Amino acid sequence: GAGAVLGRRLLEELGCELIVRGEQPDGRFEHPPEPTAENLADVPRAVVEAEADLGFCQDPDADRLALIDHSGRYIGEEYTVALCAEHVLSQRRGPIVINTATSRMNEDIARRHGVPIHRAPVGEANVVDAMLEHGAVFGGEGNGGPIDPRVGLVRDSFVGMALVLDAMARRNLPLAALADELPRYEIVKTKYPLPADRVGPAIEALVKLFPEAQIDRRDGLRLQWPDRWLLLRASNTEPIVRAIAEAPTAAEAQALCGRAAQVLAAT
Image 1 (cartoon, rainbow, N blue to C red):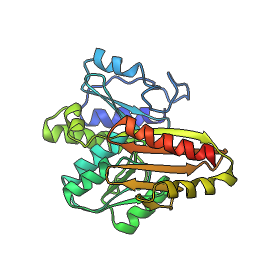
Image 2 (image 1 turned 60 degrees about the vertical axis):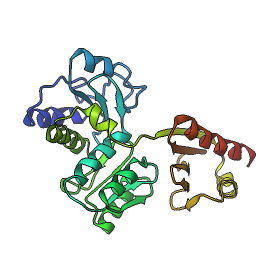
Image 3 (image 1 turned 180 degrees about the vertical axis):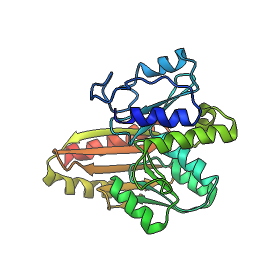
């Protein structure tokens, strides 16, 4: 993708030895281009066979970054922002901003460093606006898009590469160890067909179903509890609703999505 040219230059400037896959920015990809675990199924094996310290996986326009550790474990995209936030806050204190669908790992990280964290509606522009409003030292979206205002107010996979490598070098720890230090939660993402005129009633039904939850209506409906959350967002382009849940275990997150599915089916 587009990141291949600058990615090589950046990593060589940082003193890395590297193997680059998909280096020609010609629009032809070795696999579906979104950097998910399913699409990158063959990359972990390549990292292990090369005896590499880690693998960086960019999307085609280089604003998202997924990580693979030396053992071939897909660390994923959510950990990219969290690892970068932890490293930035270890050096400079200040507010951080994430979107409504980003892992609560970042809330735990901000609390540990004694700084405020703010959530903005999904979308790079929304996160950047909130960063400017709050004077944030770091921000990002959980699909692997870190934003460092010292470099630019855009999601930037190159920033993610540099911050992760700097954290590894400063602490003399492998990526796996840094990731294992972070709080662990599981995110489940689902989508359901639902006509636009049924979205409002479905949201109100969910509010009634979970009266104890903290409610945020800025970006669809976000219900939050002390250790989990559920987000319901209608698509702007097709008659579907996306339900995203995060909890300490995948089963608990799936259960939240399941309750949402029941409400949507009954609306």
